[in-house]
Figure 1: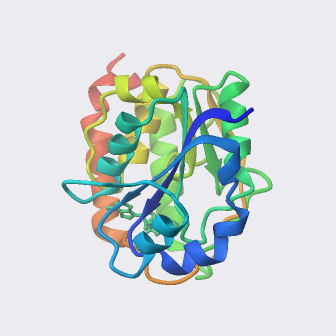
Figure 2: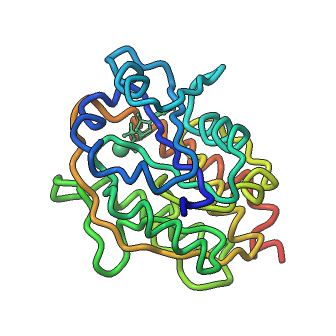
Length: 231
Ligand SMILES: Nc1nc2c(ncn2[C@@H]2O[C@H](COP(=O)(O)OP(=O)(O)O)[C@@H](O)[C@H]2O)c(=O)[nH]1
Ligand SMILES: [Mg+2]
C-alpha cells in the first residue's frame, strides 16, 4: 500500500541534483508525487515531465508560496517537502513520514541534533551559528516542549490540513521558521530526525545570507505577541 502522503519536490534550477538523486528518491512509495517549480530554465522541468511528475507553477516566487501551492493541490493526509539540491538525504524522506504516522504533528530533519552532520565547510561556520541562534530564540520564546534543534530546515513532514489551517503568510525562505514557531505556539508534538546534510549537487543556493537572516528575524518579531514573554 502506498503512503497516504504527497511527496513534494521543490525546484528552482536543480537539474544537477535531480540527476544525481533521482534513483534514490522513493517515488513509488507515495500516493502522490508532485513538483512545485519556481521557474526553472535549466532542464529541471523537462527532467520531471519526462518521468511523469506533475509540475505546479507558482504565480509569485518564493518557497513559502511553493509550500502552500503544494498543500492546496494535494488530496492526501500527509505531506513531505523535499528539495533535490544535494543537501537533503533521500533516505530520510520516508523516516519523516513515519514520524507523523507515529503521532508527531511536525517532523524536521535536523542538522544540529546528536548524530547530525551540517555540510558547512567554512571553519567559522557562520551559517550554522546564525541558524542556531535563531533556533535558540524560537525555543526560548515559544517552545514549552522539548528543545527543537533545527527550526529552519525545510526538509520536513506534516499533516496537510493542519498545515493549511495554520494559515502561514511568509512568501520566501523563512516559511520554515514561521511553521516551526506556529507549531510551538500550538503545542504541536515536534520530532527531530538527525540528518546528514550533503553538499549542494550543482547550481547555487538562492538563500543569500544577510537578507534571509533579516527575514527570519522579521518573522520572529511578527510572531512575538504569542510568545511566552507575553504570557
Ligand atoms: N518551487 C520553488 N523552489 C525554490 C524556490 N527558491 C528555492 N527553491 C528550492 O528550494 C531548495 C532550497 O533552496 P537553496 O537555494 O538550496 O537554499 P539553501 O539550501 O538554504 O541554501 C532548492 O531545491 C531550491 O531549488 C522557489 O521560489 N520556488
Ligand atoms: Mg539547499
